[in-house]
Length: 88
Image 1 (cartoon, one colour):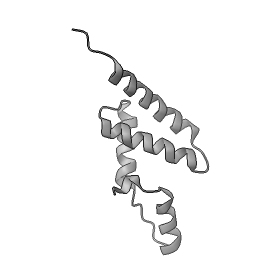
Image 2: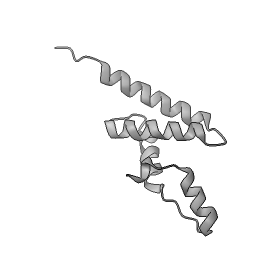
Image 3: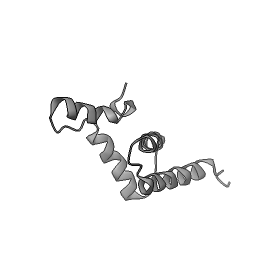
Image 4: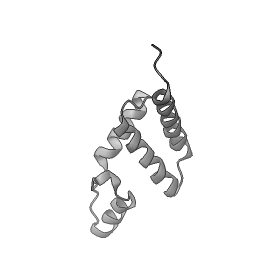
């Protein structure tokens, strides 16, 4: 199982239990941030990561509605591009 498919709360649990400031999801968050900076999802993998991030953000307190909105917009735009039929 990829790290990204795990519960993001596990990172907080590890920090609380070990008292080490570690971030096992650092590369995952960096990938998400790069997509946000670019303003566009370009691959199915990115779509998967972003979709999973939205699910996690919705379950995390406090809810980051601004980031959820940005990510949902990117997801919607990607789905629209994927469903367009190329004109011949």
